Length: 234
Image 1 (spheres, helix red, strand yellow):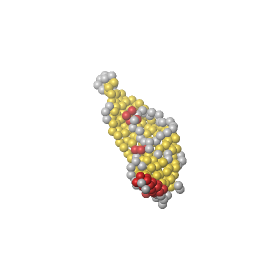
Image 2 (cartoon, helix red, strand yellow):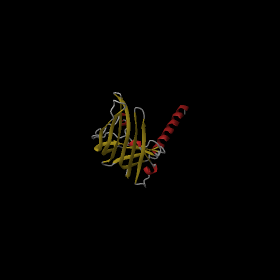
Image 3 (tube, helix red, strand yellow):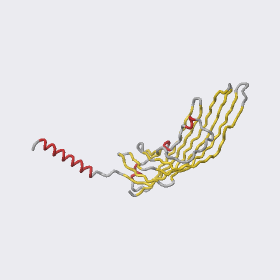
Image 4 (cartoon, helix red, strand yellow):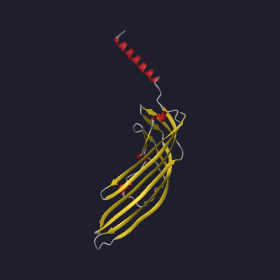
């Protein structure tokens, strides 16, 4: 038998062995869950802005709070798949998010300076508990690194936003408080432990941003959420 034929036969045997090994490989770990979500997102801000207008100094001071509370109208079905020895991939969207946004705030404008400037204080808006409902939101679950659960940014939210009450400066409005700000601890043993019928993960984070320059201020964000996993039969 020629060396070429022996080589071809040897390659064929190796390929058959690999195929047999793959066929008998242990199936990838997976689990199915009914998932619910509840969350509260709060953004509080204060700011001061000074400018010169017709040789007088005009200082604007404002503050406000926006609080969003959300939950699912119906549970989501999520599939969890083991990735390597430490990670988990979650498949399926967490949709039907609905809730309400409550906003309050105030703004005062003080004008003054050397004569002939006259000191004036004007309230340019004050509002309490303006509430708007929303629906149609969605997010998803992530395991960005070992033992960490994170939610994706919300998308598809429908409904009227609270009116400008009072208006946020652009630098503050650009800070969008959303679910990914908080992360929670994820135990992989809970995910794939068939003797764990139910478990939950909670995230709670506070972040403070200081603004400097023409606009001076502070923005405090707090995000809290809880995801409840109820195991389903695959």
